[in-house]
Image 1: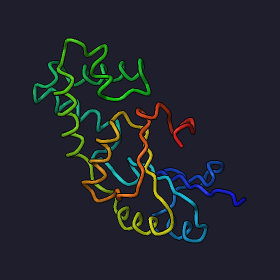
Image 2 (image 1 turned 60 degrees about the horizontal axis):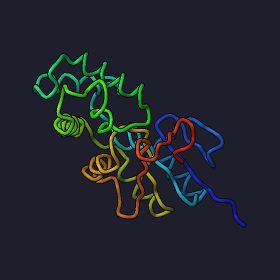
Image 3 (image 1 turned 180 degrees about the vertical axis):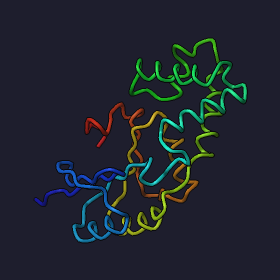
Image 4 (image 1 turned 90 degrees about the vertical axis):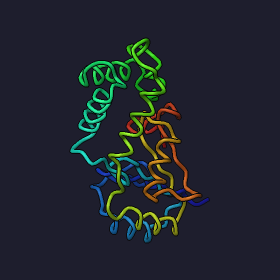
Amino acid sequence: MAETSRWITNRTRHRLHGLRSQPALTWPELVQRATQARPDQIGVDVFDTVLMRRVTSDHSAAAVVAHRLAASGVWPASPEEYQRARDLAWQLEPDGSLAEWLSSEPFIGLVDPSSVLRAELDIEASLIEAVPGAPEALEQLRGLCPVTFVSDMYLSRDMVHTFLDAEGLIGPEDRLVISCEARASKSTGTLY
């Protein structure tokens, strides 16, 4: 029986067969290596690999969201208090989704979870764009093998799918796996 070949890629390393790591490749390098290796499937990280936020870091995205929520009145306190509440909710339920966090301590009684969720999604959508070269590379990779997008993310699969679709990145045959729904994570290897 032939060994299954599986590639997982993200912005900092590429793992072949889930065992060894190597420095990140450019999109053309990744396509070239995949063409040579012919993996049975390829897993592509979502954020910072095919989608990026127009901010300097993930922490900055959280700050932008918190400031805009407070400025709009959706969040009734300071941006810093929103970030602290999100951090606390994450500590209590690290594999949870944003919807779950907004319905738990420390948010209970302070906000309408659905209003905050809608507002945060709108803000996130305004910050997101495709990584240059990703759409073209993904089309080439799809010609070689199935593509699965993976993400350690607190947003639901439907929300992340919407972001990918808006940028023309996800195809009808592609899979999408999100940690908060799978109750698993990339860092532990259980999401793959």
